[in-house]
Length: 409
Ligand SMILES: *Cc1c(COP(=O)(O)O)cnc(C)c1O
Image 1 (cartoon, rainbow, N blue to C red):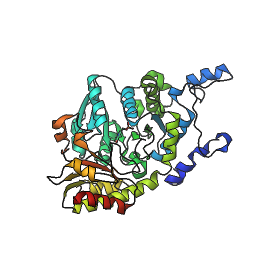
Image 2 (tube, protein in one colour):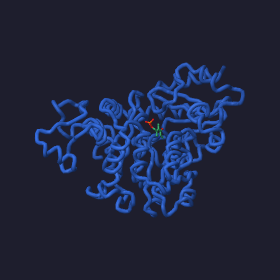
Image 3 (cartoon, rainbow, N blue to C red):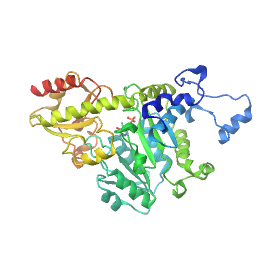
Image 4 (cartoon, helix red, strand yellow):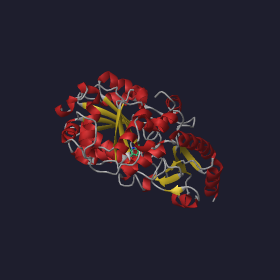
């Protein structure tokens, strides 16, 4: 990226000519693209001519967003999908086969955890390890390990994976390293710097930021040697080897699962991305203030936030991330009913989303992690009273005021 983070996002669309000199890439709603010379249509299908054929496989508005995300992650190519989960599912479906082994962090977004369960039914073998230490990942590697999957800051307990050393381990063993960067966003952290081969982002969260569009993305950083990956189909070995992986993810992922990002959503996400840096700075500053306030509060027993000095990965987070992000979890003192507390909050909204401009709170064990059962919750360190907070961009004194009154009662 030549210019700064925000400048680059703002001016990315203008790099290729835009219809009528509009300053945004327009929203192309067309599902099909017609060619005056039928031979050109055939060339597009064969990959000999750049262009679009059918909307499930791509669209100019989505392509403009993909190019922006590649710049944000300093990657070589990005494929967008209808949700973050679709991006993760497309990656696994496109790259894994029965009999393959995967090493995953055990501190995982709940739905990714569920997807790994499904992949297990299709004959993939998943090992879950505490990824805050590379030793656990190293011990789990097998000759048929096809990828290692981690999140940057885990949701909801905010464990930070041993990102640098897992990257070194994967590089040494030639294993694909996939990092879900949703919680940090490319503004706080670029997984390419820890040698990730693929980066996943749920665009629904911080990149879109306004809670008005779903989307997901997979970015190839260009660091992984796809010639060493045994699951690339011959059809996709026509491109230069650097593009084999993303081509297979795009072709198989969009064709087989059909979870295409709609042009209107791509447009909204691209507009949201323009202010990512501004929103993340403000939300993270609010989060740090609030975490310090809550850590001192007698009615709050635990605050999990990487910005606090007693967080086990505080130093690592400080070295790797531009700031500590805007997600934290808290546990309340015995005798405080978490639902009563949530109901007393007046500004903060009880909601399952995160990465929104508004501050959102959710009792994890009773909602998102309910289905997995008490035993798996205990393994993951999810107490019944754990409340996840996604801090927004409200004025900080209003947020502190709201928590002060809700805790006073
Ligand atoms: C939300 C989330 C996802 C899934 O994204 P959706 O857009 O909701 O499908 C994946 N990973 C992480 C870490 C998330 O927080």
